[in-house]
Image 1 (cartoon, rainbow, N blue to C red):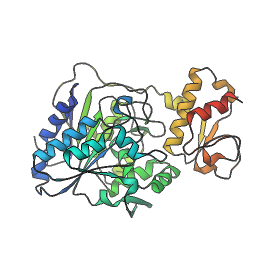
Image 2 (image 1 turned 90 degrees about the vertical axis):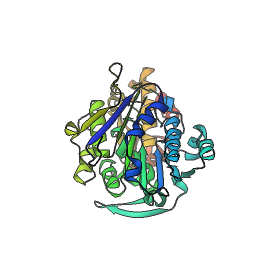
Image 3 (image 1 turned 45 degrees about the vertical axis):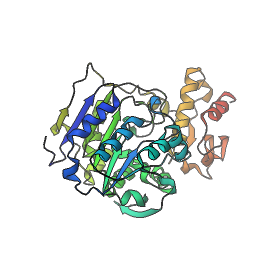
Image 4 (image 1 turned 120 degrees about the horizontal axis):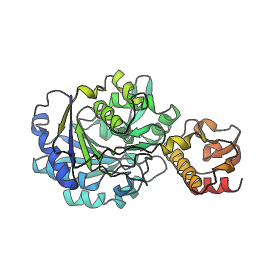
Length: 365
């Protein structure tokens, strides 16, 4: 296989995660692309929230350990696992829950909570952002996202996973600016050298998981825009539905024309494994009035609405929408979720807001 261009997407299917990961790694020419065995290599998983992969939210740990074993087998010595959970959650708790400290000790690799890192301010396409100094100093970055749904952007995969390289302050600012353009701008500054997608059992509606859909698939590419374009089609989205993809192309990050890509299947799927999002998050979003809402808060609000819907209690909203987000600071509203909406007639505090508190508020209307 030739990898001179970024015009390819490699796929594998199965149930053995270690075997699938090794299969993908074996076709990529690491020693040709990265001849310096002392090069600084970073592994960026998705640990957006402190939960385990079976929920459909986080990267399977077997992928991380298999990559480390493979790279060390080739003689690479300087490997760092680096990640930052979303605002309001604890990366270290996610590390503990998934055994990352044991992995770091077993393989003698570094483990970095980006929340503890120093940052370099970068400007991209009119947006200023604080990016992890360690991430920017890597010689080779392997992005390890989970293909899953997102209650604000529709989906999340390669491009959005890079948001974990930001400071929490910049994450909040990204939400204030609406996510789409900032995500594209970020990838114009820091682009992974290789992306391996965990599409084994992602939740196709919610970023924080809870409703995993088993697809038993992994993907690999060097162009994150091409990969996200292909992934969006798998989930039934158009590029207009996920505007950070064409925006990233306009910022020269990569190509969105996956129809012209070389699709390399190392194994054929046993049956149709393409899951489809239910559209639950989009259906419930019409009951919200977000203004610069952060993902953690908004996801918990959608989760609360889903539980209320199951209990047949959405009628208690009486046609009112629930306000949420930084744009409501010091502004009056009727129903408000999160600390930013403390001026609401019926406020629910928290940063991020808890789904249970939202449910209690609606029940008591």
